[in-house]
Image (tube, rainbow over the protein chains, first blue to last red):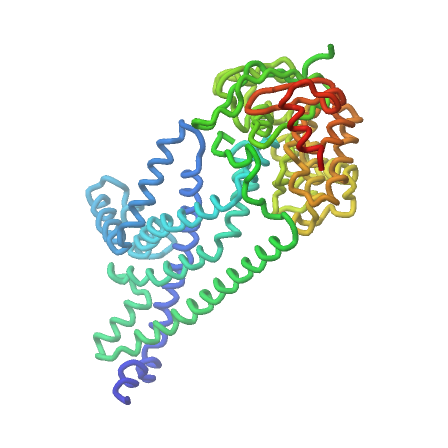
Length: 267
Length: 250
C-alpha cells in the first residue's frame, strides 16, 4: 500500500514541483479556453454553411459536409502532427511567411498555436454537428413564420433559429468542451509544456508518477463540475419541456393537418 | 367589380406523386373576406402557402395587386420578400418565437425587415397588442400565454408589417373550444376594417357571418364558390352538400 501511495501521491514530489505543475496546468487552461472559443465559433460557421439554402449553394454545402466528415474521422493527434510538421516546412521553404508558418503570436511559442489550430480544426467539426442537431430540432414552423414576415434566410437564422438552437445544444457543447480540454494533453507530443508534459518530465527524472497524478487532480477539479453542470442543464431542459407539454399547446404538435407536414420548400 | 388584390390562374402544385392543387382559378377583390372550406387534404393550406410563396407553385400564375409574383425565380424583381412584406400569414400552430416576449415577437420583423427604430417598432407593437386585447401581456413569453392569447399575438405580429392581405391557415383548429371566440372576434374586427383576408377554416358560423365569399375545395380543385350565405345555406354541388352535411350535423 505504501508503495502505491508513494508512487502516485508523494507529497514531497508535489511540493518540489508545484510551481512547474501549476504553470503547466495554466498552459492547459489557456489551450482549452482559446481552442474552445475558436472551435465553438468555427463550428457554428460550419453549421451555418451547411444549412445554406438553394441549388446555388450546393457546392458550399458539399465541401462543408466533406470537411466535417473528414475531421470527425481523423485522430486529432494526426491532425496536430500534420499541422505542426507541414506549416513549419512551408515556412522554411518560403511558401508561406514565417509569421504564419511558425506562429509566435501574443508571445506564445509555435507549438501552442499548432495545438490551437488542430483543436479548432477537429473540434470545430464535432461542434458543427452538435449545432446542426440543434438547428434541426427547431420546429420548421419557426423558419416559416420568420420567412412569412419577410425576413430573409440570414435574418431568420440569426434572429430566430440560431438563438433557439444554441439554447438547446449548450449541454452537448459543454460535453465537447470537456473532451477538448482533455485532448489539449496531445499537444505535449510536439513538445509544448502543458501539464502532462511537465508531469512526464518529473516522472522520467524521479521514476515517480505523483506529478502526473497531481495533473490528473487538476483536470478533475474542472471536468467533474462541468459534467455536473451538463447534467443539471439537461435536467432543467427536460423539466421545461415537460411543463410546456402540460401547460398547453406551446410546442407545435406533430403536423397532422393538410399542408403543415409538407415542408422542404424554399422557405 | 372592385380591383383584384389576388388573382390565381391555373395554379398547380405537387409534392412528389401527390398532385395537391389541380388548376386553381381564383380572384380575390380588395377588401374581400374569402373563406376556404373543404375536407382535410383538399389543398386548402397549400393554396395559402402558394400565395405567399412558402410553397412556390409548379405552374400557373399568381398576381398580387396586378403584379405577377410567380415569374421566373432569380429574374423576378418582385421576389419572395416583395410578396411577404405585403402578405401576412397566421398559422394553425401560432409559431410564435418562444425565446422572445410578446412585444418582441411583434417588434422583431418590423426592425429587421422594415428597418423601423426600436422605439417606433415597440410603440406599434404595443398598439397592436392592445388592439387584440393583450395590453397587459406585453412582456410575457409565449409559454406563459394561453393558445388563444398566443394566436392573437401571432395576428398582431403579422399586422405589424402593414400587410395588404392576411392569410389565416386554420388558426383556431389547435385551440381549446373556449378560446376560439376571442381569436375569431379579432378576425371579425379586422374584416370590418376592410382588410382583405383569405381564411382557411372549419368555423362555419364565422364563414357564414363574416365571409363575403365561400370557396369550397376538394381534391385540389375549387368545387364551388359564391356568396357565403348562399354556398353554406343552399350549396348546389353534391360534394359541397355532403361536406356541409358532415360538419353541420353535430
